[in-house]
Length: 511
Image: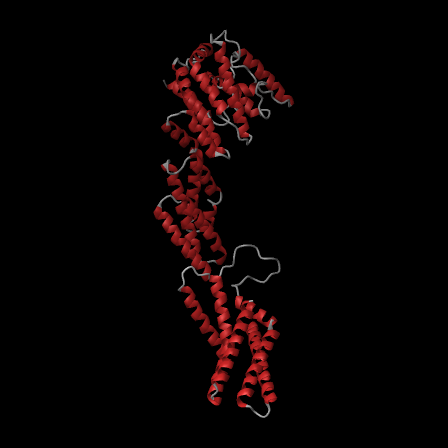
């Protein structure tokens, strides 16, 4: 029947989390069996109240959380003027204790009103952001639907309303629609609320057919899906001109919304949601790829965040692989352009540049300059003493003094090299070349080791480089002493001194 179909369609349209908030009888405070005369009188009273600014009074059995507005009151009276819509609102409000007109058993009205009351209270609490137990509502409706037949009451009301647009099939259709409408109110709250997973589990407890439940889920998320599709279309139009703006159209709102819907409609069960997530992932990926292609340092960090969101949304392996490759490329571009870590710089600070750790090591070496000079002076004294013992010259003290002076000069020279390195950022001469070569050797060896520690390897390269720069002159001196004096003992002593110097410099550089 066309008219019966309209009644059912109307119930499906209003069966959401505000089913009771908009109920015409709750808004006006009229009983469900109020006649046309009672309705007109109440409407006149409400109009008089509105003219002097007196708030409207809703049903005292379950008052609205806030007084209804003028618009809500007008809408309620429009419903009461249409018997087809009024019958639906009667079904979901208190029938009262009077059973003389309908002929129902008093227990039928009592069980119906108990179910309606608990359902309305729970929805009010959910709308207020509270977490509630739906099992009482489920039990109350189960008792009513199993023990009573609403069709008898609805048929009696049909005769009273006496409207040609309502036929005898309407009570049957509405009774069959009740379980579906009850679950629809839960799913509507799940879409708009803060706990979609919990409410989805609650909806599954109402013993609806799985296909019917899935259809209800698709209907519940329909408006959200349409809004996301509209934003995706807008983002696609912006991809070629302003890719970053295109991504911002979807972040963070749309990404978060898709995550919310995932708890209610998992993409592995709902192809439409899987396709929507995939489309969003592709748009975000393409936007990030265009941003990376522009190689603007200030945008690359956000491009990586966009790719991370795209990866989280992607549902196909091919798309995830593509996004992963683009993430690698984005990181390489970011490193190549020396993008600093994101975040505001302190006021008055120097512009951020690539880290210069060797310079900080050299400054530490300068702070320890006296120790370097003292160490090399002692090493020079040891070498001078060794020369005096082997050659047995007439002036042994002079030889010792010369060794100390030479060692001290070497220490001063090393500190000077460190100072020059601090000023101009590089070492000069043979020592610098040897240091660089040593660092490359250590770096090559480190890269070949599995499970290497990059930070430790870098420190090791610096230590070896500076030690080599300090030791090379001493090694050259040892070779010269061996050639001119022919004394292996003296050569060994100088080699030990060179080793001590190298260790000392390494400790200073890595300290």
